[in-house]
Length: 173
Image (tube, rainbow, N blue to C red; front, top):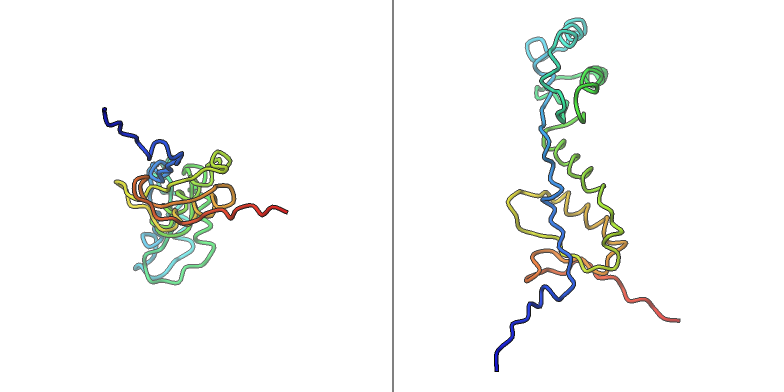
């Protein structure tokens, strides 16, 4: 008699969700106000306005841009707002913060586009290993999005998972 190998993982009905598929792929750039400060300390309104007016904004074309100031200087709120008015028409996305914050924001935006209804009453494995470093922010967000609809959430690989969430059995009256 021949031994028949059964792929229990394939027959388990598990759905694997790979967060790398939602990893931001677009180009990013940083607009640093430090480059427009006098002695990297002081923002002079007239000079700043003139610098922004004369800047070649095409280097930010279709990129996701983080507006920040890497110098230890007091920057008035309007300075960030003014930079945003120049970036908004050319950039894909504009946020205040570091490049890492921009990346996390884009990742969350990509995850928000998931049709969670496709996972209704499914047993979902959130893939844990991959080529890209996925932040804790993304794992928390996908858990938050899926918990209301799935039967269960696991972390890892289909052959070796860590249980995260299991829907309570419906109580019969």
